Length: 383
Image 1 (cartoon, rainbow, N blue to C red):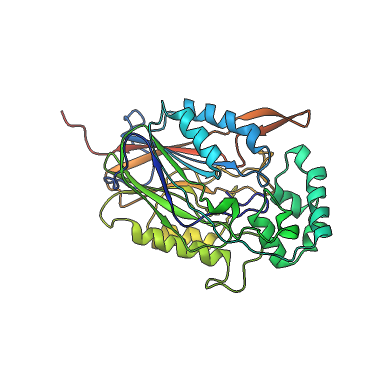
Image 2: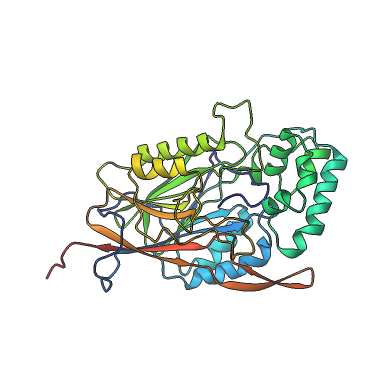
């Protein structure tokens, strides 16, 4: 996902894994692209979806949750990589509701124990909060779009340190003004990743990235001898300044370091599937490039390939929850896959209606649309 308001989360560990079995880790061969035989039976189907369950950041989070669960029950994917399932309540609700469909799952419960006092002025913070609730919340407008447009004047008046604090405390912004216990990482340091599978998983593990604001990392697991990586890379935030006292100096540097971690983690001779909201994408006649240097690093240096239509968005201007620009941010990419190809389809993009403050609003399941890929063997059938 891009950002969606003032966001921030994840990155250390404290394991929370469930399901009848743990998970295994690697895959067989294949390169990106569309299967030559459209009738070929898939060997494994995968789905990535940024659920946008970010209360205070992505609008209508709790109203959308039951619709997301219902849609996931109906999907045919074997393996699902979810991002932005931030709270323990949301993760438990999804796991419990889908246990009959996806009995195997993995989630790492990362935490944030830091507390700090931030000099956000009480009056300026109150005015911004009042503006957001009046101008944006009733209409299902995300916080990022809100602070960029309707409430930009209030937001721009804040200090950089205050903006960072608000991004990490979107569900309780007044903490940054009146209580010396504001979080350094959003959502109590959860990382938002949840891996679900119809098939047994093994060797599941979580590796943290070095990040600020949001604790990010990657889940690796093996499903049917396939190495699956589920992640959510840092966003190149436009409305939140990068801290000046850190080893890295920009959101872009964070992203690039994460790609290098992904590259080193991928087995050199085994097929790896990388899936998630990568917060980067191609530049085409219909898609605006996002963090294009990261995209080049993924495709030209790390060797990840993707064969789906680069003209199709997953962050789209027709989505009321998304803001401004058309991007392709959500990906299922293959690396070192010699005997497998993938056929792709965008999913979870249907409109729905929810009620907010007595108003019926047309919205979508999330600010992102989902992407599904079926892996198909290119080897001749054995008779």
